Length: 171
Figure 1: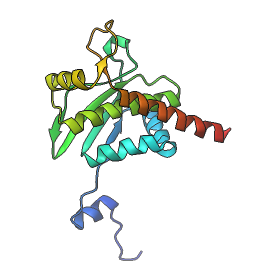
Figure 2 (figure 1 turned 120 degrees about the vertical axis):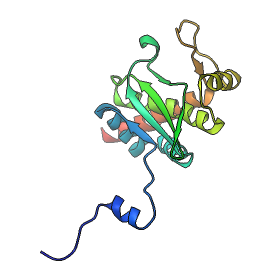
Figure 3 (figure 1 turned 45 degrees about the horizontal axis):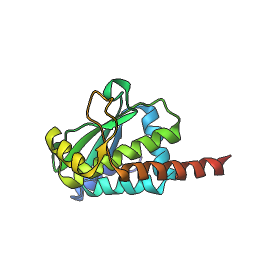
Figure 4 (figure 1 turned 30 degrees about the vertical axis):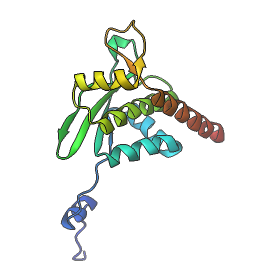
C-alpha cells in the first residue's frame, strides 16, 4: 500500500481554509429528495430558486407534513432562525402528489422563502405585514392566515411546464 492518505473533500476544503457551501435545500424524506433532484435536473426555474437561496445564505428545511390541518398542500412557516450567518426556514408539504406536482409545490414555497429572505423577515408579525402588503389572502376558509404572491404562482407554473416537457422527452 502506498503512503498516500485519502481525505474526504470536506476535509481538503477545510484544510485549504475554504468551508464548503451547504446546500440551501434540506428535504426530509426520500420522496421530497427525489422531487428536489428532479427539479434541479430538469427545471431551469427550480435551479434559479436554488441558486438565489444559496446566494442569500438561506437554508430551507422541507418537511413532509400537512399545512393548516390538511387544508393546503404546502406552506412556508412564518418564522426564521438565524445561526452561523445562515437563515433557516421551514416548508411543510404533502409528499404524496405525483413528482412533477410535488416539485412545483416545493418551487412555489421556495419562492415564498426567497421573498421572506430578501425582505429580512424573522417572525410571524413581520411575515404578516410583508405578505399583507405584497400579496393577497388565499381563502378565508383556512384556520391559519394564508397569503399568496403572484410570483410564487408564476414559478410554480413554470416548473410544471419545464418538468412536463422533460416528461414528454422521456416517453
